[in-house]
Image (cartoon, rainbow, N blue to C red; front, side):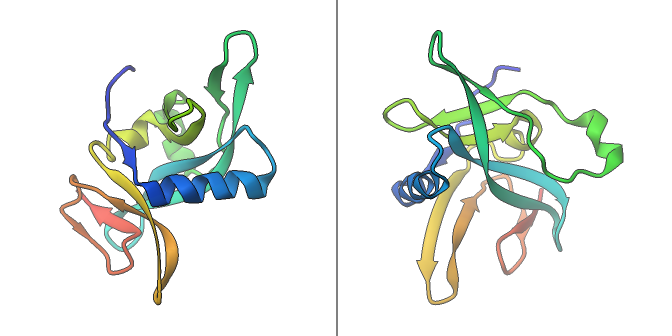
Amino acid sequence: MSMNYNITLTENAIKKVHSLIDEEGSSNSALRVLVSGGGCSGFQYNFKMDEVQNDDEDDDYDIEDDDFDYEEDDEDELDASGIMINDECGKPILLVDNNSAQFLKNSVVDYTEDLNGSGFIIKNPLAKSRCGCGNSFAV
């Protein structure tokens, strides 16, 4: 499925992803965002660092299978393909499967640090409501 989901990252998010990649010690790591059912509002965001396979012949990258825990009933509905968002140098920094991307259309991924804590947040125009912590939302 080829579609422009228009998912962007702020400068703070890009800097944090680069920092996490450096911590991982693997130049083939990227942040994966997954939307799954759950949370207090119906859907929730999940973040993790994941590996991206590099095909050395033409510098193309393939998204490696992720290892999130899915409900068994949902496995058949998951689309194994996905989208990658690259930094200004063309290196993958964000991975999103197509099922999750449809819930993230026109979203902005940000990283914040304040007195309440730190973490990635998603400014999602499709979310009709969200919980107080910002990790779950309703469409």
